Picture 1 (cartoon, rainbow, N blue to C red):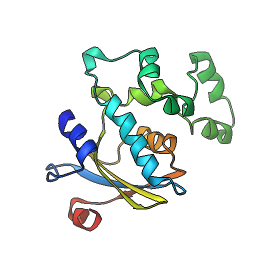
Picture 2 (cartoon, rainbow, N blue to C red):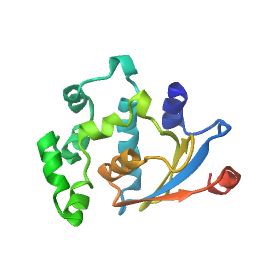
Picture 3 (spheres, rainbow, N blue to C red):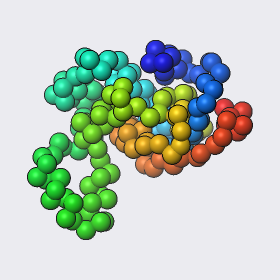
Length: 172
């Protein structure tokens, strides 16, 4: 499955949708930078999809493997004490702080035991709009790592467009 995902990342989806999978489309608004955002997404994904569970890099190793622009856009790692302090903040402040993910929070969701979505394909609709498809075993599913990846890569907003398998032909 991992090698198929890496191939789709590089070449696009050329195979048929796996049975019993949900295909979900996301629209990323990119303010004239859709091509760059897609290339950056692919750059990061090609790195986080490589390691196996038994050879998972440390956070320090991830910080050197991932592109500098991604690490710089990511939030700083926080201590347990800081996390507990943040829980006491008003909701608006907590939401604002949660917009940026740390490297450790991001890569956590790419460990084989934590995968809930897999790259299917992407298309540039226009200079401002990037459309990404992922497959999942079921929906809803946690897609915050995808959201952060797209926003760190240049998207201003990300919106899921849930579709059924019957709608696939309309969206590809």
